Amino acid sequence: MNSSALTLMVFAMGTVTLLTGYFFYRVLTAKPKPEPDSYTDDDED
Image 1 (cartoon, helix red, strand yellow):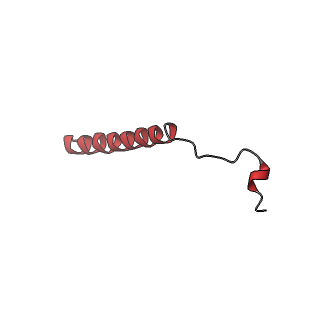
Image 2: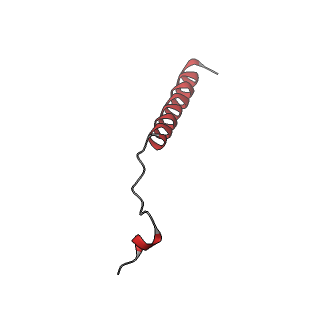
Image 3: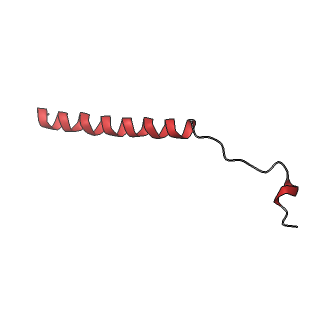
């Protein structure tokens, strides 16, 4: 494998790894949406 192929492979793998880590971080630190306390709060009347 020549050096340009190795450089491209390392760059691509690094980019995918960083993006995956970023989105895992975003999911794990997201604030939960407020949910209704009971089923009666879902009623329209």
